[in-house]
Image 1 (cartoon, rainbow, N blue to C red):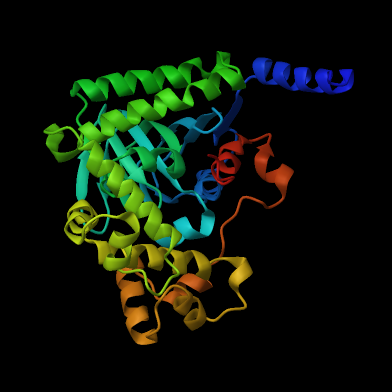
Image 2: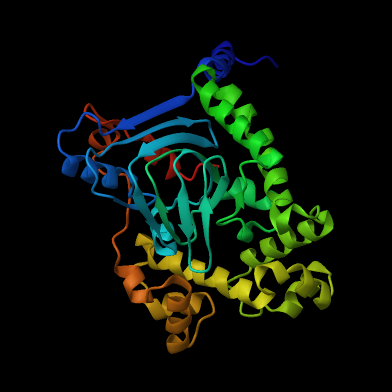
Length: 365
């Protein structure tokens, strides 16, 4: 039976629109504002969804960011003064930006640090940041590139995604050169791409990232064991689907996945051990629940017990050790969102627009 003509036209129109529609573009700049104080205030407000930025009080202050929305991926080039960039796991839970940031510095450098590591990223180095983790970085005056990759796209194809945070691939490494040139080309060609063309580049981009980042672990010495990688993905998936079960134990996991306990412990060694991984994932669920506006009717103790933490004093201690704040402090912090006065926030004749914030907080994947 033939489709009604009107439906055919509707589908054809949608296809034509995707084929011809240009990718979205965003440009923000403080150059149209008068005083440094006003520029800094607007810049901090515009970036609060991802970082607490603390610029050095150098004059004149400037900040520019140009971004392209390539469907599942976002590219951006940012220029600004020397700055301290702060982000905590509590920030990540509040504002919903759950991405990996693949960065390189065109100009300037970055001293990256978290709770355990510190490293210096120089011009051309590839630096990976995990937006769910703590960041305390200091940068010189800079111009840098960032590819924003949703966790749901990259994590399943990486052997050990938990080790990516703070990874640096030296600028002179051939893989860094290839990745850097590809990402820069992706950004430069974006103005001439349609939405459909951009969408077709998501998969090859993720594949290039996966091969580059996996080969960058263990000092580039060995290829990842694909069997182990597949087992680890299956184990993590099973754990995250059963975190609220009281009987989630190494024995139950091994039995459900039909692997030996020895294999389970060996495969999970990069995670710090199976028990530690379960505890960390449950703590993240607690944190997400604490800052969820729809969970305010539950007490902290009730939320903790939902995820298997039945001893309040022990829970408070391990929560603070994991996130650096108490559960009550995490809950009391204001929820950060870009959904304020929509038109005023997204479009401002003096600064351009801030669409990039909306793209990254819409859970693109």
